[in-house]
Length: 195
View 1 (cartoon, rainbow, N blue to C red):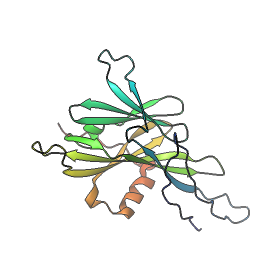
View 2 (cartoon, rainbow, N blue to C red):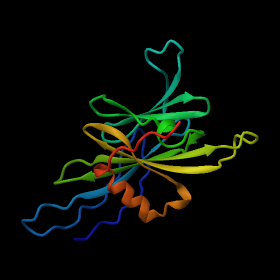
View 3 (cartoon, rainbow, N blue to C red):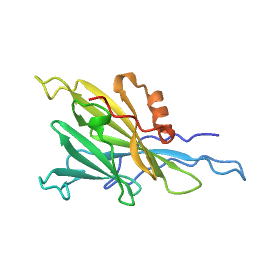
View 4 (tube, rainbow, N blue to C red):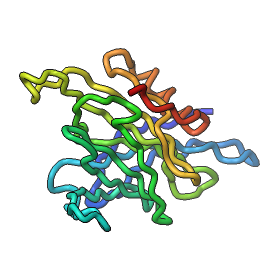
């Protein structure tokens, strides 16, 4: 079975995707799944600023269009920390709880998140995983300094989304990341960090 070569495609306004060519299949055999990537840009101006609904403190959030009907909400959750919620096409919310799952230090998000998509039997591509990069800031004297970069992988399915892998970026080669992403649907959600 030949796998198509697909590169990351930048999302166009509000999250359109680029897909790879479907591999040729033997006559009578079911078509092979097509795996693709897409990105959502979290930089200022790419997401819509809003106020957290039902929050008496009027907490600001960012609403970011995703792909295939999904969206992301980026919200402050504690001093120097943010988290991401995944909103499904059915409007179900899954909080990824990044400060509880990935790092308890102050951190920000890298400007892009990556979606892993699959298309089976000619259906439209749907996400199975999300890749986030967290930029940790441990140096209190220089809070702008990134001291560590974490990569978190979340699985996405009909039950919701949760983090299935968290790794320090320099320890993660592209093959290891690819395996973590493609195996995310079958992996359990990782436990919260100790206090």
